[in-house]
Image 1 (cartoon, rainbow, N blue to C red):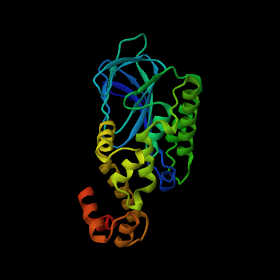
Image 2 (tube, one colour):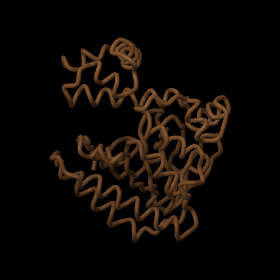
Image 3 (cartoon, one colour):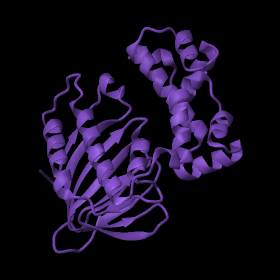
Image 4 (cartoon, rainbow, N blue to C red):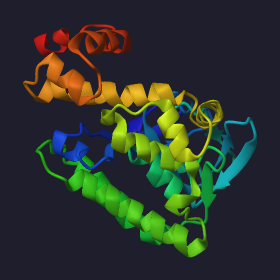
Length: 282
């Protein structure tokens, strides 16, 4: 383990393969942190999700509304892109010891919501450690192997772990049925139909709201607009096509609902800061 001024830490990274990304959710890192008195962290406002499990001791947790909570052993909290949290060392009989995993993909938010996590409910206490520990151990072993072959071990372990979380959430009444969240339903709608030329008013209609009401609700919950999210889906798919296929710019444009190569190239350049042609030159 690595000794740092504010923590003792072990950490492993994973670079997901194209095959893994087909599943819609994939792990990117995992690790263990034993906090020291100077330990203080803030969740970054970046595209990426995480779950942190307090295995021993306690941490102070400040949610996105500025409310402070003391999280003790067997409590788990989530990290959501653009939702800022802070957490830091709390005095207890044992130093704070936390397992964590980060992940990404279009299904990440839906998985968190289904278990019961959200911006309004960022932590859940009372998890069964004995049932979770084997999954932590398995993920640590697979990550530590540094295997980069095109296998599904990482994704399958993550899904098995989420399945255990969902089972425990269901047993304790935390599970959110898919139909309970208009926001989640609208995100799934965009994830499914973003290549079909849908507009924000189409998404709002699917959610049963006016465009202005839906945009305000989405932005308040997610920290960015539905237009930004829809654009991200299209640009990420475009980048995938550029890197993994020989499609022409016109073919890519049509595949993600742009009328021609010119309008696609302009949107791509505005989003990434360089033209799509440069991607294939790298």
